[in-house]
Image 1 (tube, rainbow over the protein chains, first blue to last red):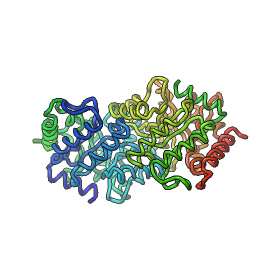
Image 2: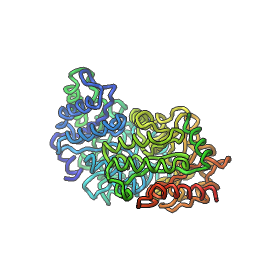
Image 3: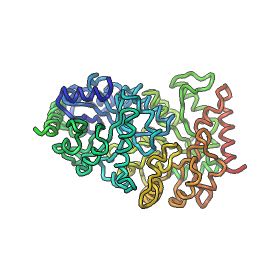
Image 4: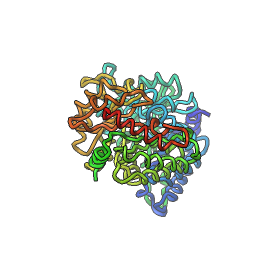
Length: 267
Length: 267
């Protein structure tokens, strides 16, 4: 099943647009979990068990596993294997490189780690993105307008065709003719979301920046949803993973995911 | 010793501006080397032994290790440990993410893998770059004008302050006040190198694209060197690693590195 079919099925089944971000910071593990790579693995498997019916997608963040060294990559593989087959996975990696190198990253993400989708930085252009496109099977989420303050440094630079992030949105829409693409657009830019949606009417948007980064969940569907009221995957990482630092972390994570789901749906 | 001191010492000692890129493609390993992660490790250690006095820096490319899974990260750590202490290492990663994630990538690169420098994609702006700056100890090479054809897609977009890559060059020069920065500029753009040097007069340039990608080594120093005739690190990966597919691969790699060194120096 393609990424898109899988995520839409999960979204419909769970009436959810929540993307559960898996950013396991060893220092923030709750009580009762050993601060080791094994502890990280156990913690994330419990989070996955507690939230999978509320998630339309899981998004492991490569950096947090890479920082654990070799064992971290083993844990990453293990937890991806633990995610139920009917909920897709986006590897949040944000790399992108010349063709022969991008091929290797695609191999790592799709073949070794068995993820359904990736995040890629568009700065290097089409031949850095192409190896990640595998027909309509997978999906490449291109950074467009990111949630952080530094997004203004380059992404808002004016060009003859509007600010850079608009050019990226338009270009991703074109590229999606050759494979499935999506866009990363931060919830911290509510005024820009409708414009990005206009430029890329059919692309799924991965939307970080709700909660700890300050974006509001309640209005996102109106700002960024497609004409079917779909097309948004709203990420929360810290707000779910570290909802409680006590022994009730799994219940607290479920509750946080449920609250986010309800806030998005407006009830 | 800081990255900059270390690389200048190695460059002076070996009269060399060669950066040996370590992109180990398991399918391309020469005769007599087992096509396993262990084989990759053995192969690269021999390449390092054969070229270290001709290299001012080594540049392992993360993708090629990541594609080998968990064992690949073990090999990456092993070969970085094998590089002599007086030759610095750039982890070629090209990621970049919001602050708390970038912190984890910096931890992976500097603390776990013990590299002296990294490549980072500038698209997400300053707060995605800052965690990699550690005073003047390390060095962050920002993608500016990359060697691939797709570099034209966004990097050459015109803004009010010139094409995007010029804005990046100017900005990196500013940021280098807060830590050491360098730029990635492809040898495939000889006409643009002098302009980038003008905008970033003191930054080291990591220059890929010589050889398999078509750039010429002989003129780079004139096009991109700083006012001391320094400041260029000219990368060759495939041209050195796979100089021979036979048992003489180490000698052939040394010869290729030596020829590149001499071509750069103009003799």
